[in-house]
Picture (cartoon, helix red, strand yellow):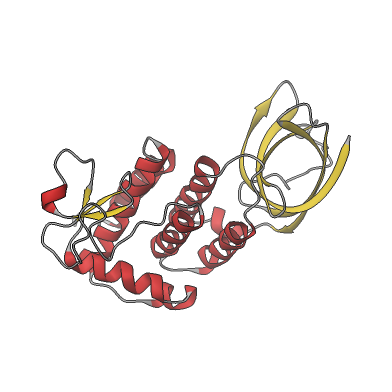
Length: 261
């Protein structure tokens, strides 16, 4: 039975049996790994609060090689990202980001660049006043790192250079398509302004992309388009998207002024 040690982020967890916990990790050296933390749900478990969602830790696990599940021996906290869990919008956006990793990455397929991007995203999310922008910047880069980078300089069907009217993004085809080539395609309409914004975001550094000011309409369109891209790659809309919608409704109600007497 092989013993491994690696840094990992908790990206999912659920109860297993009477006292155990089944935990999904995204690791630096092994990619996505699912493990059993024995007795993790007992009051005096050695894991304590280490297995909270988003926590970065040093993971020690045993792998028999005969099962997709590993045995988690230790998970020592390196950074808990508490600030992410204490703010509803940050919590929702971070949950969306880890769901992208959980759903779109393959088992045991190491991707150190994606691991580093996830850590950078959680660190930015913890202090950001624009958590939606952080998750958008994460999503755009994650799609690229996972091998789905769409082409946005020309129509992928006929080769026509952009700009052209009624452009749309067809993830099955691999990029932009023009109206003449779009018939029947499950494509996402893009405004000319958004194509330009996507090109700018690709060219900017991480910090620059977080600071980039876009018109409110472009910000809204960018978020919707990225949601559509991820949904097509997953085969369904992320479950965390429903939480985000409910959170925004709740916050809008809370923000409404009380009626005057």
